Amino acid sequence: MRVVVDWNLCESNAVCQGIAPEVFLVGEDDELEILDENPPEELRAKLDEAVRRCPKAAISLEG
Image (cartoon, rainbow, N blue to C red; front, side, top):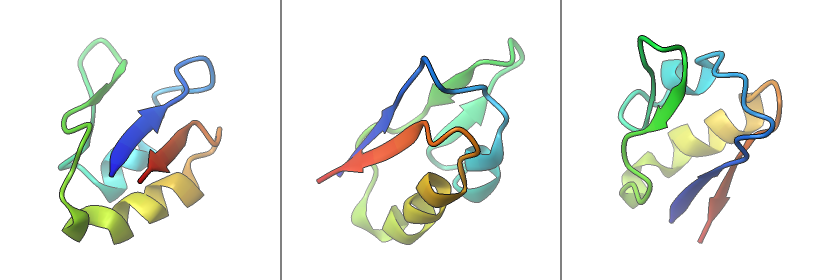
């Protein structure tokens, strides 16, 4: 699986970080970073929730 962020939509509001801190981090510069673009399958439930709860619908999963 691959995490994809539409950087034109992302507001770096950290909802995804709160759900899956293993994958997402909003740094000191208030910009979202993807810590693991290809996370393990055991994180799929968390990532599905992050996709659903993103206020700007900026996150998607491939694979």
